[in-house]
Image 1 (cartoon, rainbow, N blue to C red):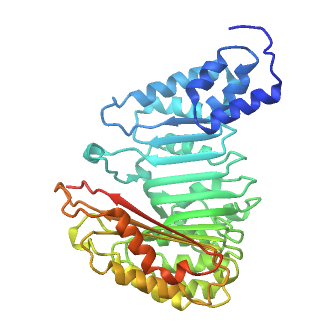
Image 2 (cartoon, one colour):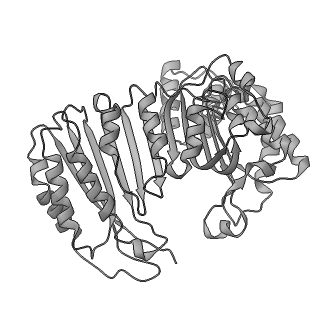
Image 3 (cartoon, rainbow, N blue to C red):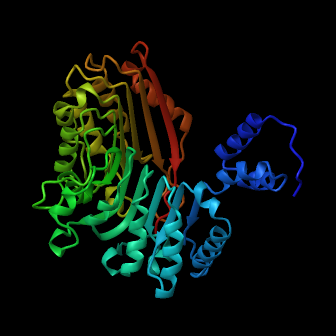
Length: 437
């Protein structure tokens, strides 16, 4: 490694490495780090900013992830300063041997500067060969592994926490969070269990916390509404919430598998959040958009500026291939019922449909009529996306048509919306192929 001083201003070097980091070009950053001692620390902070220990490729031997963790621990023990650069951790949780727990405990205990923690259950059993996931029962984890993982939540600068594919996740693990920052919490396919009766914590433990973590963004699955209620109201008989939702700015509700799933939790969040600005909802299967206008009545009409609705067909069964019609018509009905003093500015609707769906034009005309109202005085951007499903199962595409013609037809059907002054209309028609057996 050269020891000569590089004849470039330090600010320029910072700009170069920052641009490489934005494009995630770690290969170039690694090459630059080896050119001089001056560039080494500048590049290291980007190279080690994000670390991942995943096991999602069935062709990779199961022990590969653990070997990488042992090597990485040895690196941190040799160069402890590198731990200061690690701000983001991705880890697949799975059952491991007891002797491996020590490695994980030592490694996680060094990561005191984390800002983002992403934890998901690793692929389980036969499902991993099909690219599917199963739930990992948190109660079956070794206590030492569970403790090491929970220890990650206590880092003082935590800003984002993502949890996915866990069952019987004890609510008490959130008591470890003591971040001084606004937190983005994402919970996908997680069943939270109120473990107050097990003695894991008590009302005294909740009351003794110096502060309740404040959420700036929350993303949760609709079918886990009971778990969301635990986060909102706290464990039973305590009267202390696990999180503060009052300053929530962004709310995402995904995979609502049933019409009433998570409705109470959603309404309670809207009531509690005084300045919610962004609402994203993913409608799946036989769900509907009922209750949207009621959410505006509860408090969204004066704060919500961005609304995104994603209507997804249930690919598990061909009988639901036209399932977007019901939710879409309900959405149009709810839009007509919105209060005229709302402040909505950006509205995005995404739908999965099929080329053989003759009702497509009628739905768009209804949507156009719903938006062509004086209730949307501040609306400035409308985006409409169609994902056209061209195949079911392993069969070749049955319908072939002109995509540009379909897009133009969509714009024609939305003629009232496109004529609104100072409003930007975007229509995207995408082909999406389904390859599910």
